[in-house]
Length: 436
Image 1 (cartoon, rainbow, N blue to C red):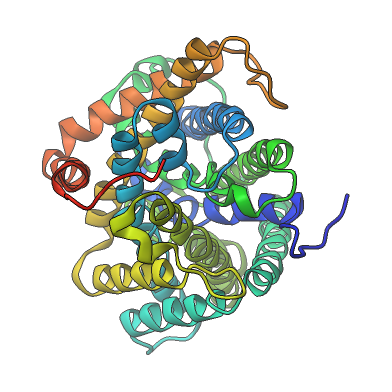
Image 2: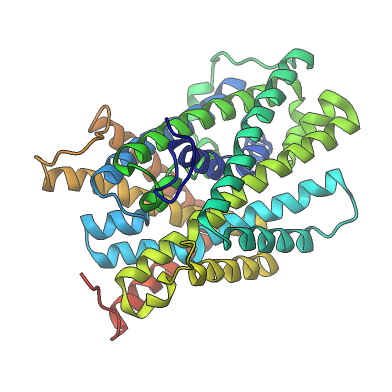
């Protein structure tokens, strides 16, 4: 297997790195503290992460088949345009271009600012977050080759460091009085509203399993390597997430984690003292750097692909000689900067999560429609366990959307409003016409 990224496309290793980097970010180091507020069973908490991983894996395999059959950059924009209608694809692309990547970049940058304070106190988290996003964006504006090298450099060492953190926790930590075997009442907890609500945070931590579908056109042999990267990346992250959360619960008292955002630093301090907390804070900063870099890289490819199809957005398709979509990249940078200055972490999280789940739900539903419309079409990758695999994803995603709307109607309405605005723009603009 060729590991180098050349003008002919990026390798399977780099495509997998993009998936891993997109997934491993703020969620796994920030959400456990909120889950423990309502759920105190070790078995149920681990079930949360297991179900989240299963859902992500089913989604990744479903997207892999669509990417194999429809090999073009753009993710949901490409898939939904081809399967349903260009208007549906445009709404998904509009959502990605305006919030789908800019908001997660802002979330990761906010978390980076907070965690960096645990390493070097006294620096403004906001100024640090904005500066970081601008520096990484400028690096990726240089060339695809530079971006791929930076991504590999940031991603694979962080996988090793997280694995080392997990191993050291079990080696040097002291077991807490918590059971990870099922007990009476666990079934009721799994069917409860707090479990469903917590699953929303878990699925945010797993979001990014579809990352390489946004850069299909830049991957070598995309019909084979994009599905492989989705599967490999998701499996790697499932292992990391289950290990991390098991270690957090095994080594750190629940009352110290409950309601806390910086669970990674708290666990590090409990394991290794104050210096250990700073060390883990530094590790998490490296993790977030990789996540931000990945989203800054792939996000503009959606707007770029839209610009190739929609005349009024043609300016977004302009690329430098090195293949970088400069206008689309700058648009995402501006939106991210605005979010950093105007919104809070929780509001952005809930707002973006509803729209991301809805777009993914429609895309996996699109696989069922695509199979029905093209029963004899052959391509290198088909979903294992079809149709159960996409149906599992649709069931879990549908449940999450129901609870998001029920518990946070205002933020959900804002997300839906963003999507409807995109649909309105598609239909009322006299200059908007697909070239195809």
